[in-house]
Structure formats: structure tokens, C-alpha cells
Amino acid sequence: MHETTSSALGAFDIAAILVVASALFGWANHHFIKLPHTIGLTVMGAVAAILLMVADAFIPGITLDNWVADTLEQMNFTDTLLQGMLSFLLFAGALHVDLDRLKSNWLPVLLLSTVGVIISTLIVGAAMWAWVATRPRHCTDLVLCVRSVDFTNRPGFGSGRAQGRKRPCIAAIGGRRGKPVQ
Image 1: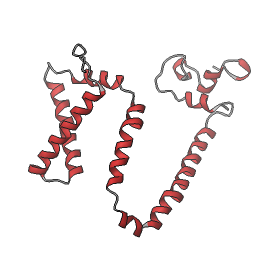
Image 2 (image 1 turned 120 degrees about the vertical axis):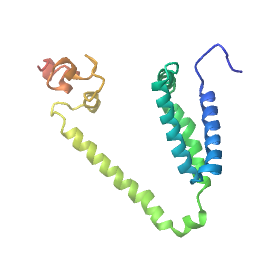
Image 3 (image 1 turned 45 degrees about the vertical axis):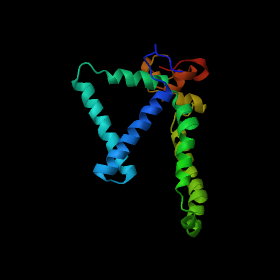
Image 4 (image 1 turned 135 degrees about the vertical axis):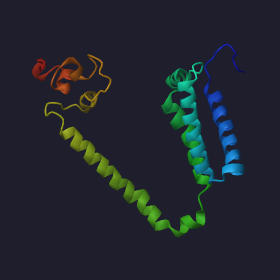
């Protein structure tokens, strides 16, 4: 049952709102705009988002930005995306696969799904290796190197630049032979 004392919407309520909005936008697209289904929903969703932002900016009683920020802070995107949405999206995509067309194009599909993945993995790996290789030589721990690229600018948390140090990796590990580098 729903708890009526809480003003925050739960995941079920947000999903219900999105499904109803999608159904209404799909109906309006089918009867009036007549764009292809996915393009119509994308365009109508973008227009609705822009209209909500304009209403939030010009109507003083509406505070959608605070509500959206609070709702997004409460959601765990990893669980929501990987455990919730991804399975439905993959299932819906698999329903629309034309098996006869897949059989006729088996070679390009096989090459892209194996060789293409291997090549892209090698490219990303080489880029990450080059990025780590350009870090200071004394920064040997990858976790500390990644931590040195902290964009939060909180003093004392990974970013040596926030404390005025020249070498962020040294700031994270305390300097060469225990001496901080200035």
C-alpha cells in the first residue's frame, strides 16, 4: 500500500508516471503528429522536458528543480539501470530481431560481435595505458592515480591541487620516501 504522509515519489510512482506519459505521447503522435514511434516519443519527451524547464523558470510556485534533484539523489542509478531497466530494454530489443535477416547477415554480425569487441577493447586498453603512462613516474598505484583526477576539489580528498601541491599523486600517498612534495 502507498504511504500518504511522504511527499517523495517512490520508484513505482515514477515508473507509473513515465508509462502514462509515454502512452499519452504515443497516442498523440499516432493520431496527430504521425512520426515514427521512437522518433515521435523522443521529440515529444524533449519538448515536454523543455516546457517543464521553462515553467520552472518563469512560474514562481513551481519548484521542479529541487524536486528532481532530491528524487535523483535518492535513486541508486546502478541498481535502477542495471537491475531494472537494462533487462527490459534488452528483452524488448530481442523481440524485434528479424531472425531471417539475422541468418542472412551472420558473417558481419559474427565479426562485429567478436573481432569488433576485441579491437575496441585493445583500443580502450591502449588509451588507458597511455593515460597511466603519462602520470608522474613515482605514481605506481593505479587507484591513487585515478584518485588524483578528483573533480570535487575537496581539500584532503585525493586532489592535491586543492591543497596547492604541484603533484596530485604525491599528495595522495604522502610524497617520495614519506616526504611531502611542495
